[in-house]
Length: 279
Image 1 (tube, rainbow, N blue to C red):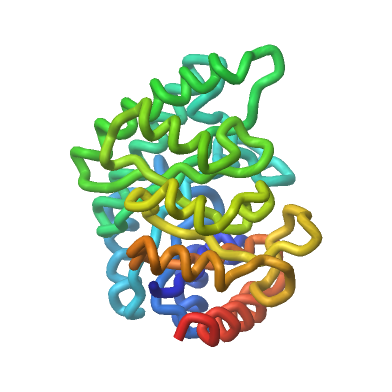
Image 2 (tube, rainbow, N blue to C red):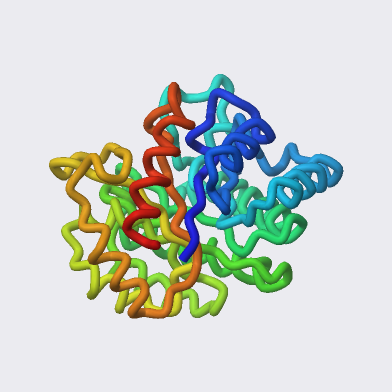
C-alpha cells in the first residue's frame, strides 16, 4: 500500500501548486479534487488536462483517485461549506441528470490522465422524500454512470459517511448488489467507518475486492473532524492489517481538508506517522 495526499487540503492554491507541494513533502501519490478551486470537470479542456497529466509524470507522482464527492462549483457564489448537492439521489430529475453528466465528465478526465477511479457520494436524505425512494434514484443514476465508466475503463467508488443516504458498509454492499457493475466499489474512508462504530475486520471483509481507494485521517472523541493521523483515537493498525489480509494493494489517501491554512505542515506530519506504521 502506498500513501497519497488529496489536493483538497490545498483549497487556497491552484491545482499545479498543490501537486508540487505534495511531491515536495514526499508523497508518492496524489488525489485530485474535481471541484473548485482545482478541477471543475466541465470547465477543464483537453490541453489543460494534458498539462496536468504531464506535471504529475514530471513530479514522479501516481494518481490515487479523482475526488468528485463535492459540487461546490455548481453554486454561485460558492457555499461556505462543502456540499454534496446536487447529488445522484436528488429528488429533482434535472439535478440528478446534471450530477450524472458531471460525474461522467470526471470519468473522461480520469481516463485522459490515466487515473484509476472517481469517487462519489450518495448525498444527504432529502426532507419529504423517503430514503427508499431516494435510494432507487441513486441506483438508477449509478447504472448510467457505470455504463459510461466501463467505456473509459475507470472505476467508480462510493464513499459512505455518517448522515448520508448511504452511511455504512452494509448499505453500500446493498447498492453494489443492486447496480451489479464490476466497475462500482468503495472509496473507503476509515474515519467514517470508525464513526459508524464498524468493526475494521468485518468492514474490510464485507468490501473485499471492491475497495478502489482508501481515505485516511484521524478522529478524536467520535467527532467528525478530520485530524492529523496520530492526533486521535482511530485504530489504524487494525484497519491496515485487515486491508493487508484482504489483499488490498492500492493507495491510502490522506484527506486533511480541515486544515486549509497549513496543508504542508499537517501533510508532512501525517506522512511521517503513517510511514512509521506501514514501513
